[in-house]
Length: 230
Length: 264
Image (tube, rainbow over all chains, first blue to last red; front, side):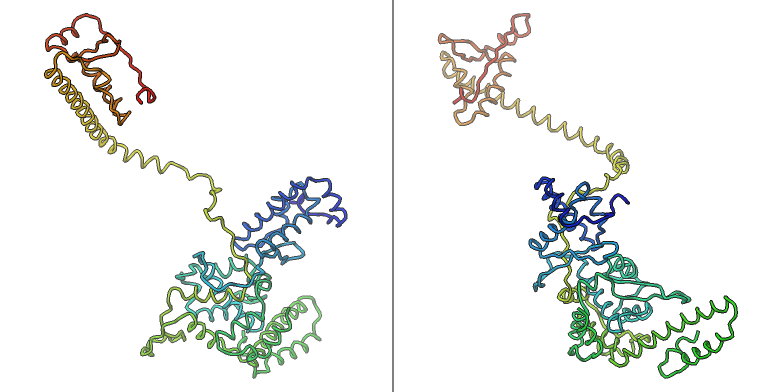
C-alpha cells in the first residue's frame, strides 16, 4: 500500500501547475468517479480511507489529488447537501454527513437502518448522561429493561451483541475499549468519532429531555457540558 | 475484589488503601515491588474515576430506570394493568412492545442526527460475485428430465394429429367446393386465382394455395393454362387423375409466386 500514501502533500500552487498539464475533461471525470465512489462506499456507513480513494479512484492523478477531492466535496454539497468530514486526521479517514434539515415524513426505504438508529441513540444517551463513559455491564443492564438481551436473538436486531460491539464500532459510532486489569475482562463504552459528527451532546440531551418530558436544564451538569461542546 | 465496597460513596476505603500504598512504597527496594505498586495505582485510579462518575450522576439525578420506562412508553408499549404478580423479579416491567416499536423510535431519532441517506441505485446493480456453481441445478434437471420427456411425446403427438386433421379437412372442403361448382356448371373452368384469393386476407390466400396444392398433388384436380395463359383449375374425373399419378407419367411441378403487392 505504500505507493498510495502521499509522502509529501503538494502545495496549492504546485497543484495548480499540475492541473494545467491535465485535460479538464479527464479531471472532471475523476471528480465524478470520486463522487460515485464516496456515495457507494457510504452505504454501509463504514468510514472511507484516503488510501482506498487514492488506490481505487485517483490513481495516476495523484499529483492533483487535493483538487479532485475538493471538487468532489463541492459537488456533494451542492447537489446532495452532503459533507465530506474527516474523522481521523492522522490516518485520513472520511465519512459523509448531511447538511440538510430533516424533513418530516415516512422513510421511503423500508429497511432496518431506522430501527438501528433508535437503538444507537439510546446507547449514546445512556453513555452521555452517565458522564461520557459507561461500563459494558451497565449498558447491557439498561438495554435489558428495553427487552434487548445480548444472549437472545432479537426480533428486530437479530444478533444484538454483534450489532453493538461490531457493527456500531466498525462504523465508528461507538468506541469500546477494555478496562485494564479487570478479570473477567470488562469494557468501557464511549461515543465514537462518527457519533460526535453526526449528532451532538446538545441534540442527545434534547432527545432525552423530550422522552422524559423535561427541560434539558433539568440535568444541570450535562446541560452545561453540552452547551460547552461545539 | 472489594470493588463495590470501595465504590460506595460513603466509604473511605479507597482513600485508606491509597494511604497504605504510600506507606508501603517507602519500603520498596526492588523492581518487582515497584511494579506491583504501579499495578495497584492503575486499579486505584480506575476505581477513583468510577467513583467520581457516580458522584457526577448522583448530583444530576439521571435516573436510567425512569428513562427506560419513558422510552418504552414512547415506543408504544401496551402495559397490561392487572398483572402485578407477573412482573419479572429482575425488574423488567410487564407489557407488550409492538413490532414497530424500534422503528418508531428510530424515526424520532433521525431528527437528532445528520446522517447522510444511503445512496442506492433504484434498479439495483449487477452482482459482482461470480455466478453460483451450477452443479446443483444440473442434478435437478436430470432428475426431472426423464419425466418431462415422457410427457412431451404425448403432447406432440396430439398436436400433430390435430394439425393434420385441420389440413385434411380444409383440403376436403375446398375439393368439395370445386366439385360442386363443376357439377353445377361443368363447362366453365374456374380461374385458379378466383378460387384461392381471399380479397381480405393475404395470409388466408396463401393458406388456400397451400391446400389446393394437395388437391393437385393427389390428382383430384388439375391445373391448366387457359387461352390467356392464366391458370385454371378443374376437378379430374375419378379414375383418370389417380391413375395418372401412379403411372410413370410426367409429373409436373409448378412454382407460383405471389407476393403481397401482387395480391393487392
